[in-house]
Length: 316
Image (cartoon, rainbow, N blue to C red):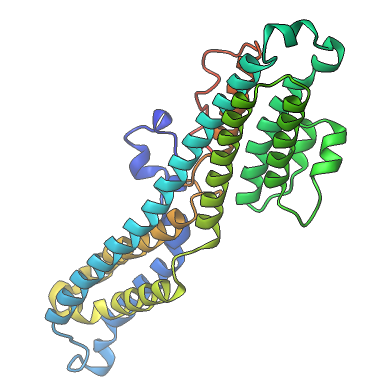
């Protein structure tokens, strides 16, 4: 995601990395060169059949604009839903951590009879699983390996949970649920409080399912094909209607109009998968770090006041 705090007004014009131009420059050059070819071709073969009326292009251009609007709205809905889901995940993980710290042991009597040596590391172990879950979900949505979890989970948990071919985030959630169930059986956790914690786990599971739905259900391929073919044909035929009206300005006008259509098409493709690594995708690295800091702060760790402020222009 582009960090607007680092964005100056002149970056909107001259910062190519954050715009669509790096991805659309090749077809843009092809269309522009083709318009130059159409401009000078009449000098050799005559111009009678090269002129196309403007009316069809006006109608098709309006239809394409509406089509792009629907396409990009659908893509942005997926992007915004992904953002809301990760916001909910942040709240649920923070709530679950608060409950683990404040609701265990269940009663004063339980606290007095507690095996301190056995219990002292339990909350931190659950906290590491919560943090590990956020990182595991990020890697699942980005089709990355899970090596980063070795720095978060204990060696025993990493070997037991990170197994190729299974859903790692689901396994981590299951392990959290099993630990809470054990606390209930040992009397460390009141049944009512156990139910509340399981509701949070259920909410996290629902968030994962919604993210996986977005990830595995792309915009129908026929929708993309229609846009590619119609917009490509439109850009290629555009010089034939402009050459008699704009003359030597035809390549410049074609280049600008083609950039608009190609950029809109690219924006839709980029927003369609909000969990990727493109400059305008959701910054899952930043979100997982934020969840990690929120959990650790509840256990007393202190971070710099600007720890959550991105330092670079493009945040992943």
